Length: 448
Ligand SMILES: Cc1ncc(COP(=O)(O)O)c(C=O)c1O
Image (cartoon, rainbow, N blue to C red; front, side):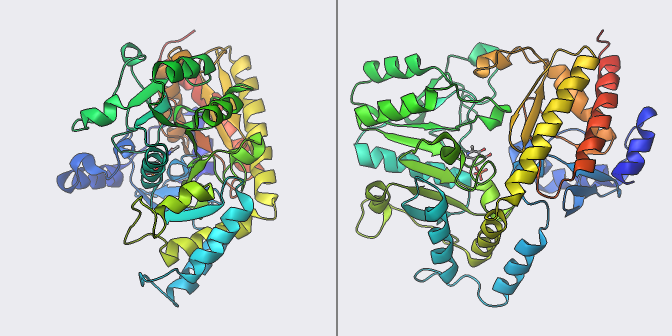
């Protein structure tokens, strides 16, 4: 059933019938632990998607959805973008993995990245954001000869031991170490210090208490892993000053914000340059590639003759590089960002009006193409503030949206992404469905 047809049914108490999806999800559980290959993919309702194009995804039962999940963010141009796909296909006809010297495309893409991303004087390619942050942190340790790293509560930087802690923590774990995995090295946990985003005083105090021990600070410039919290004026600039004063490495994790908010990353919008940047997700519109980029003296430590090891069988794979180059070429004229920013503004403004009309306490947050409706009043400056979010309403609203053919991940605090393939009409449909979904969610939760 199409999103438009689903929209007509929205006034009825429509329950999705997904027998094929459910059967596939059950079969997956026989072979994959939990039925998925990445933790956050296991959500209810259990839907198995079998087709994607533009702003739409289709499930195994033939239902169509407008997609705002965007594979956790990479699909900036929309699914199966023709320019990206066609360059990928022609590259596949020419070369696959050889694994000696640079690939020609590697040079072209690195040139583009150094032209657009202010901090990128040198570039190294890897395959995932987690690899990129792993290398960035190791580099910071090697460069400073120190061990400890500062990260912020609510920021996610991938699955490795130094960072996989304190993202969406339960209230009683905030202020304490909250590892997300068993089996982590105690030394890695001890050497990561978790602070509140937007609190420069905490960083200053931590620097004093750990004099000569901090190697670097890593942060998402906008912590999109808990929706969208903007950095307060002076916060990122303050971190830059501290890093300069203390001789430590400032790492901007732009795995989400890079390319999505600007081809030069959010650092370009802020006008503040880190020592190292990690990039991933939107850089290749859904193909697996990531990068560590940064200051020449630090990056050269990972080159031949340097003392920091960097390798990977699939690093700089021509297929992903082709997708990356085609994505950058699509972004260069500026029309994509103009379009997605306009739709993002429209979504935020109208969602705010709908919540006001329905007397729902809400803060519609976002930046550019990213939007999220928190069910709580401002101020929202850090993760602790988000503990006031009405989690039940957040999740129920998104489940109601899914019934109506709009896919927003039904997981607390997850952001939504608009792509170049979304149209004004898609946003209008989404807003109409939002009104109905909020009313239905209020009824189902018996809220006034
Ligand atoms: C900001 C940020 N950094 C790093 C990562 C890890 O990237 P990957 O999942 O590609 O390993 C993510 C993934 O969501 C992320 O959001």
